[in-house]
Structure formats: C-alpha cells, structure tokens
Amino acid sequence: MALIARRGIRGIYKLYVGNIPWTVSNNELRQYFEKFGPVKSAIVKFDSNTGLTKHFGFVHFFERDTYRAVQAEESHLLENVRLTVSTVTVGIQTPQYEQPNRDSFGRRHQAISDDD
Image 1 (cartoon, rainbow, N blue to C red):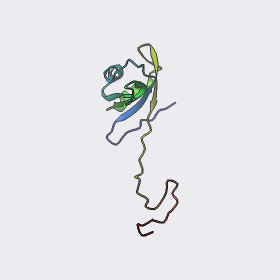
Image 2: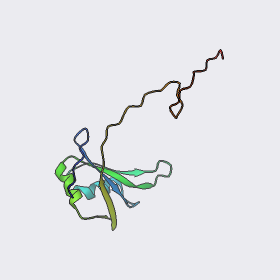
Image 3: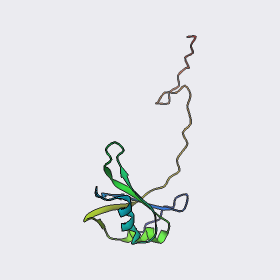
Image 4: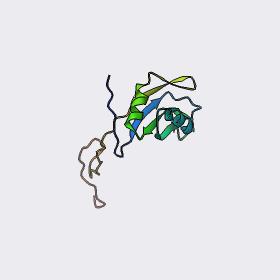
C-alpha cells in the first residue's frame, strides 16, 4: 500500500504515535525516531490535571525520506511495547465567526434590551 506524506504548512511531516509507555519522555521518543533521520520535534501528550501520560504523542520530521522510512518499518518497539504509528491528516481549519442572536443550535433569537 502506497503512503502519501501529509506536508504541513511549513514543510513538516507529522506522525501520530500511540501506545507510548508511561515511562517514555519527549527526549526518549525523539531518540527512538532519530535512528530513521532528523526529527524536528517529538512530543508526548500529558494530562494537565494528573501529570500522567495520555499514552500518545506526535513526531515531526523535516524530510519526506525520514517520514517514509518510519512508515516502512514493520513495527516499532519502545521499552518492549509495540507503538502504533499512523499518518496525521492536516486540514484547513475554518474560522469561526460570532453569530449574534443565535443559540448553540444556530436558531435566531431576538435580542432582549434593558427596556423590555
């Protein structure tokens, strides 16, 4: 199956990494993926309330060849745990505009003034 690189706005290739062991830091994640080539960043996501890992993160690569080399690898093991690696779809976010006099369902409501 052919994989097409999703190129971000700044030419960065991004992968989702799941099933990250709770003991793995950003630096350890980066070191693992650097064996394939240069890594722009490696980020493990943490819960802001508990400080514990959410067991997933993202790795950004500068080069398409590095990105493809990671995807071509049959499996990825970090601390004897098999990681889940998949592409990230980069989309264009539609700006949200204020909708005056509308509720959360988009229904129009007449504005109520202090005189009413």
